[in-house]
Length: 437
Ligand code: HSE
Image (cartoon, rainbow, N blue to C red; front, side, top):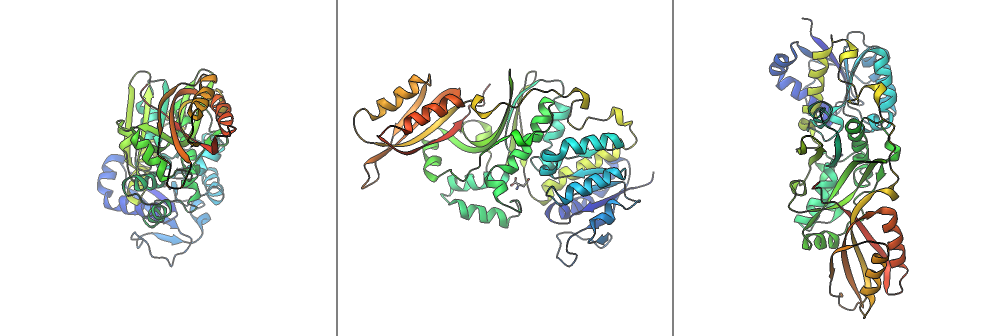
């Protein structure tokens, strides 16, 4: 059978890794796909740059349009990132009747509905395993492996850079900036590291996972985003004292009235497997009604790990090139005309437990005033610790863990506590999940 011709857009970390994996494992890949796969052409912004891969057998160009318009190319591999030029190129490739494999989470999370509609129109496939959790085949697991289940919730450590930073802060007492600089050096961080530390990258990935888990359209704009920039060494230490670890989690949960879709730092009991996922590793915990809890773990970033997912998508596309489009696995797991309109819940309706940290004046009745406010709002306390005042300070740090309540209720309680004359400054809140049911 005639070989399948690929055109690669982008020869950076993931593009270079993809070229390497395709070449290193060519024989195994052909045995699996049933056809030879060759890279015909690749576009890179600066052809003079040093690469991590051998490009001597590839037709190189600085013009990505030449690749998507090349009539000899069957599958376009989009690895340039961003959602402007990448969007234009992907839509053009689809218009030209080419299948697309992409690692671009922003593109899929923000423009996926439009891109999938166009692909269906043209009878071609857009595959995006590498967009979420690097090398972990989580899209495949959710879309196919768990298709007998109603997914109840999922929670994932889906930003390697954030996890690397939090792990370093805990294990080495390193500061935030040092860890971020190291993650950048290792090639894990996004071009704009704010995407990693402000929760944008994780929100892109969670949006994609939630759409596939619940059969809803991609709704990135409704995902609550909070990053790790406000997490201090004190929070990390207090959480440990109470038997918890702080992880940056993406959480999507089906509730009766809608879907919770939120990305934020979260305390997790330290005995949970997912609490022990460290450094740049990612993990996604999925709760299905039939299977129960399942956990998927692996490298969330890096050249070869991400290439593993890109190449798996290429093999998938090659295998189904001749399959009638109506009988392919749907892009979002559910048939396009069977998506649900279950709304994304506003953050005020989200239900979770909390870690609260405040600075209180050390005198009788202060704790009682605080706990009364929580009681008046129906919020039950799970644990409480009061630390010693730092030398020269009259204030003592007070840390409380609460049982579950709705966020709107907690907002009111926090506002009332902050208005107490005996509480200094604002109350720090970190959400807490037990992840056990
Ligand atoms: N910046 C991302 C991360 C890379 O740190 O997880 C993979 O998407």
